[in-house]
Length: 115
Image 1 (cartoon, one colour):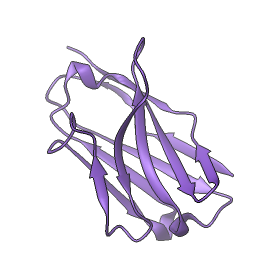
Image 2: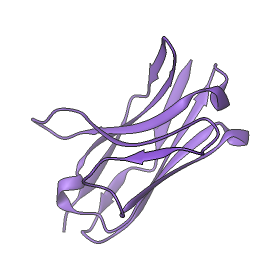
Image 3: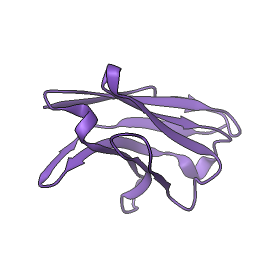
């Protein structure tokens, strides 16, 4: 099983980034997918989640209205579109695949919001 994130980087406040997470080695469409983030010295927090069929999404309070999660099951990929980024969005962003007792994590990608 493998989850590989990409799309992180350095962006100015107010800018946008799109993160991608591609899975392999499991039936991607059967898993709920989510994005988490962890900033230095802080606990990991849920950013957004999406069901296998994309009919249910949920967002962390601090990103509602700015971030959008989506998925393309044909490409085994989940996306996180991040708009109007703020310095407090700086963190390592990781994707997670979960179905019943099966729980997989990616290695993460760094997002830095700074002028």
